Length: 295
Image (cartoon, rainbow, N blue to C red; front, side, top):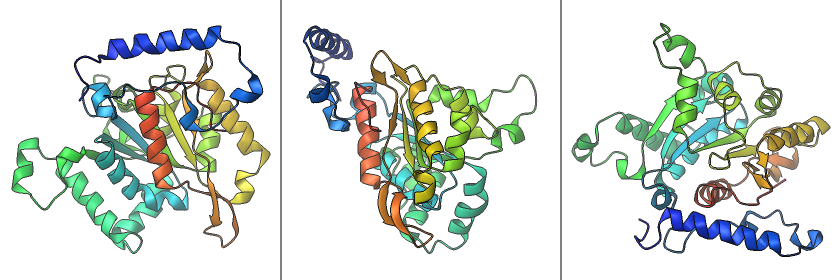
């Protein structure tokens, strides 16, 4: 936890002073153009190295998993976010993931079987009260954070009357950060054009994009031809522009990587390494987004 001598208020004050000094110093645009997250001018106090220590509680991560073949990595990513960042993670699935990729994964977890089993245990354990954990020593440890799943049609299926809470607003308010990994070309297009026909896109349609304290991390995954299509670049720029205010970016894109894709072709478009997605998420949580630009 944060040392009592280094309060969050002190951290914010020091960052403001740092920004004022930077603004008063002449800059060379070429020298300062750096797209690496590690170059951000926002840094946490040396005594506060984890998101949990800054928030004073477990960070709340909303993980959107959309219809890319890389969705099969969703369980492992959720487990690692909960374990490595000590976060509570709510996983929101789109229809394609729910009906195809994860349905098959549950039935025949031939890919990453061990993580699929651990994920199911984590979700089941997270439904139990904290005091029950001691009775299930072989299950997921709640000290690593809770994991739960929400489905595309859940809001409509569960909504019964005007007095019911609105799920997409509840989740939007709950989350400290939204990570969409993988982000498919289809869902990217919907976000960029303001469409909201499932739970995840409703959450993002209501998201406070101008608030750098509620950042979004996008990790696209698609075929090379789709990634290199002019519309993809336009749509990413549109979404990023929604989160840009006063030189700060509240939307960070983790670039896809080059490898052999599901179609058999070799090219850029594969989901970034999970290490990079987790590292970016941690930096966004602890830095509250500084002068960051990834694309």
